[in-house]
Length: 217
Picture (cartoon, rainbow, N blue to C red):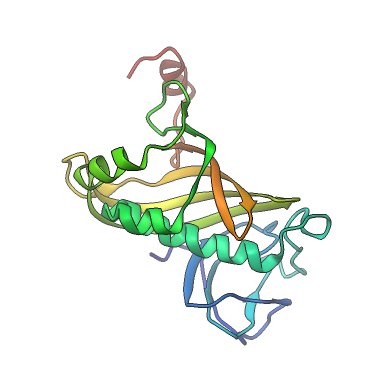
């Protein structure tokens, strides 16, 4: 799903400012903004190839924020981005088994869901296996990175899940979400410990925001 102002950058693309090590398999993620420390615009990553990273402002890109001081490597975060992008696509299709292969949840997982309400604690895989295919009947998703942070054994992805699909029995429509994802690296794998999502990808008025804050639909 291309968006206005985005361009495709592939290994060896002209004008690259920095080269970083990539991970196996071909990946497509989307990102924007001149402050991106790792991935900019739409990037295709392929095994054993360097991937081009370009600062839209024409300057040199930065390393992942905090990476130099942490235990997590750039390769670790690249793999995390790949898995997260794949998981978003699987989830909107209702492919919960694929999603659970890609995303492991921490015992202390918390969720601030896009429909609001009190934060939820824990992740019930059995419940998800039953309910997710009924709720999500097909769609497509791209992960649009806004910012990436890493320190110690933690990593944070700030992103927009650009997606559309058939959800909750409604016709196919835009279901894009702004998300903040917090991961902890445990042993050889990442654990998702927090997800905060909201549907406010499009701006709303102050009056509309006030109504929502009062709990009015």
